Amino acid sequence: MLYSDNIVALATPSGTGAIAVIRISGPDAVSITDSIFQSVKGKKLTQQKSHTIHLGHIVEDDKVLDEVLVSIFKGPHSYTGEHVTEISCHGSPYIQQQIIQLILRKGCRTASAGEFTLRAFLNGKMDLSQAEAVADLIASDSEAAHDIAMQQMRGGFSNEIQKLREELLNFASLIELELDFSQEDVEFADRSQFNELLNRISEVLKKLIDSFALGNVIKHGIPVAIVGQPNVGKSTLLNVLLNEERAIVSDIAGTTRDTVEDQISLNGINFRFIDTAGIRETVDVVEKIGIERTFDKIEKARLIIFLFDRMDFDRSELERIKNRYPNKQLIPICNKVDLLEPSQIEELRQEIPEVLFLSAKNKTGIPELEKKLLALVDSGALSGDETIITNSRHYDALLKALEEIQKVKEGMDMGLASDLMAIDIRQALFHLGEITGSVTTDDLLGNIFSNFCIGK
Ligand SMILES: Nc1nc2c(c(=O)[nH]1)N(C=O)[C@@H](CNc1ccc(C(=O)N[C@@H](CCC(=O)O)C(=O)O)cc1)CN2
Ligand SMILES: Nc1nc2c(ncn2[C@@H]2O[C@H](COP(=O)(O)OP(=O)(O)OP(=O)(O)O)[C@@H](O)[C@H]2O)c(=O)[nH]1
Ligand SMILES: [Mg+2]
Image (cartoon, rainbow, N blue to C red):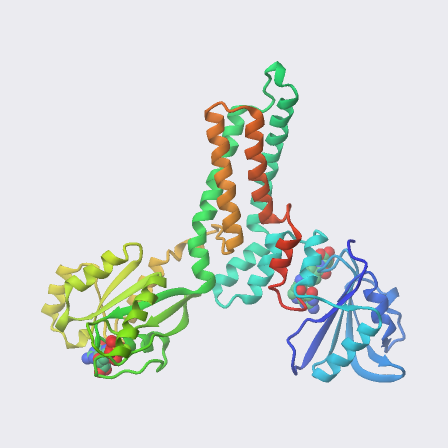
């Protein structure tokens, strides 16, 4: 074990609860706990087996502070890999604080943010991407985000990276061996096998890199801007989608001035809908600012709902948005279908085949819109066992690793000298190692774990 000191922290949220859990980790976790605990059966905690629970009292100078349950986990068979105890006490902030203070006086120190998980990582209980997934899991607020974090915590993608890295490491050693025999012109590393490995690694990296676009939006919710001319029913649609009277609706054109947004989960994926000020030429100063914000929001959105009213549909407006944002998915929707004759609907369908029809007021056509939204984010990719990365640190490392792998491949094709190739391979190994934490710096670890909560 790496650490000689003992840390303590509240593992449950601060404030009043039914029960609160205080966690201690370190070489003396069990004896420190034992020194403040009296078992109802008179047992010594230090003589108990790992993964057992004991009823008793926390006492200080004969004064009973609380009746508690103590769980014991003996290192290395614990979350952190060290000796761990957990005190489940009554959830009053006063009791929690009294017990923690008592433990601190027994020689523990307060754990810093993420320190339990940091120790788990340093003690080899999990790799770095698994540790990061623990934080993602706690933060996940949709089924999709939860699924991805869970998969990553169980080591899915880091195992794959780790294996490829080991294979690459093997070749690196063989190529470096060739350097020792450079006079003799020998090749220990089979070039065609090596080429095959490089291709395999590139494929995996490319796939993971591509998955980030989806992973990132799943983690943060998919921003969908609802845009169109004033009075077409944007705010009405927002309210229907959110199932709540979130934005003000009126028949006065220019009702929405500032953007209004909120999120809902569709099939486990969070969508963040942004209602915007209707776009038109205006001399009203406030409305002008609102319209500028509309464009800012479109900039940040991934999907754009272009809402229009058959009465004053202007095709050039739709084309303008399309041309201005060629990389965003655009969903043209004709609202107020309740006011249209079937022949008008047919006519419009001829003109814009991809158009959806709905009535925000009567709440018709909404399921079709939801289906379209899900189709556009390629939610199908979620149901397969494709790995999806959500962490921008991993994304960066993957991009850099791929770049180095490409360099190695080019080097091979050009018959580059082994010593130069070895440098690029080492770089690729470095970046792959960054993901799993085979290579780390204190700065990197500090950055990652300081974003955890205390007690995790
Ligand atoms: N009370 C409590 N609940 C918790 C945690 C915890 O630490 N305490 N966890 C964390 O925050 C999570 C569970 N994770 C855990 C992971 C490993 C071990 C553990 O004891 N592992 C041992 C032995 C496994 C066995 O044989 O049963 C090991 O890995 O060797 C415990 C919790 C969520 N719930
Ligand atoms: N008949 C009919 N009226 C609708 C429908 N949807 C919205 N409306 C009406 O259209 C008017 C404008 O609706 P809003 O939702 O405020 O329109 P908006 O696009 O947000 O307008 P601005 O905020 O001014 O840009 C209101 O009177 C709504 O009741 C619909 O599907 N059918
Ligand atoms: Mg509005």
